[in-house]
Structures are given as C-alpha cells and as structure tokens.
Amino acid sequence: MLSSSAPSPLHVAIVMDGNGRWASKRFLPRLAGHKQGVDTLKRIVRACPSRSIGTLTVFAFSSENWSRPAEEVSGLMDLLATALAREVSQLKKEGVRLRFVGSRSGLSDKVKAGLAAAELDTVSNTGLELNICFNYGGRWDIVQAASGLAERGEPITEQTLGAALALSPSADPDLFIRTGGEYRISNFLLWQSAYSEFFFSPALWPDFTEQDLDAAIAEYSARERRFGKTSEQVR
Ligand code: FPP
Image (tube, rainbow, N blue to C red):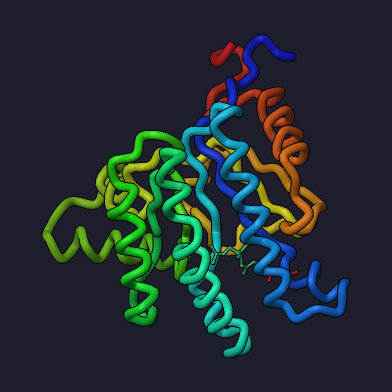
C-alpha cells in the first residue's frame, strides 16, 4: 500500500444500477428487481458502520426516471412507501439518520408524508447518515441552488453554491460506486463528485454483496487522492 494512500472512506455514494436486468434474466417483472434491490440496500446499510462509513448516499429515483413506463414509476413510489413503513423503526433503533435528497414536486401526498415522517423520526440519531436521493438530479440540484441564491440576492461562490445544494451539509463523497457494469454518472452528484474516487462493479445491484463493497473500499484505500496537487505534494 502507498504511504500516501487514502484512509477508509467516510462518505460512499452508490448508483444502484442493474435491477431491471436482474429481473429480466429471471423472466420476472422489472419491479421484482427493484424489490430485491431494497433487500440489497438493507444489507449494505448494515455493513457500513463496521467499515467506518459515516455517510451513505444512494440514488433511488432520478429526475429522468419519470419517463419510465407508468407502471414502473408507480411501483417505485409504492416500494418506497412500503419500505419506509416496514424499515424505519428498525433503522431508528440502529441509529441511522435518514434524509431524502431531491425535489418533492410531483410526489404524492402519501409519499411526501412518508419521507417527512421518516426524517423526523430519525433526526436525532447520530449513527450512519443515510441519504436517499429520490426525485433527484445533479443538474436540478445545481439549478435550484443557484436560483435560491439569486432570489435572495446572495453572491454565488463555490462555498455558497455548495452549501445551497440539497445534499448539504453532508460532505462530498469519497468513494462513488456504480453497479451494473455501466460507466456513467447519470446525473448523480455532479458537483459533489468532483474529486470522488470511482469504482465500477459488474455486479447487478441485487447481486451486490458486502464483499463487493469491501473490494471497492480496498481499491479506494490503495489510491492516491491528489485533489489537483502533485504526487510529491500530497506525500
Ligand atoms: C436502476 O436500475 C435502479 C433504479 C432506477 C431504482 C433503484 C432503486 C432501488 C435499488 C430500490 C431502492 C429504492 C427505494 C425506493 C428505497 P435499472 O432499473 O436502471 O436497471 P437496468 O439498468 O438493469 O434496467
């Protein structure tokens, strides 16, 4: 390992891709893949504390996902509502602080109420910070942040814009994982991933395991993060 290797990641972001293909391979409806994806998310959430991950940010529904078939969109909304109803009390016991990052417009009153209740219920927890990006897009976020600053007549600087983004006050992700064998950012955390280390896993999200997470962390730990400096400067 390099002497300048990065420490364990504090903030991991994940594009949970591959649910649809996981289901198609089994001749199941796409929603079955998303359901299995919720189980994977539960496992990975539980794996975080023992790996020194303080913040986990996942992409559950993008601004662009509205253009999927109506049945899949409503299925994902129902899945979120059901998962919250089933899981929040246990997450609360485990010290997880839940936050939903994204636009609330277009969401049903039932979903909006579920998100607000889950956030309120876990607000004083001090364990894992779990950010679920739902109805989120990196471009949407930059625009809403800049518009808010302009409306309030505030200066637009890297600091003010960063602080006005929906993910704030979470720090920028250290490690950005995308599952499903694709090599794209897909409008996730465009601003915040400027210096993230990327790890692309061939595993479809429902098949992603704690060992895959460990492999990503091991690769991250062996990298040298330079933040624009030279290797000599950071050593
Ligand atoms: C991308 O896979 C995944 C999504 C659009 C949804 C991700 C949602 C979950 C993992 C479930 C957790 C969600 C909630 C509601 C908490 P894809 O459908 O694009 O897969 P494909 O590329 O194989 O078609």
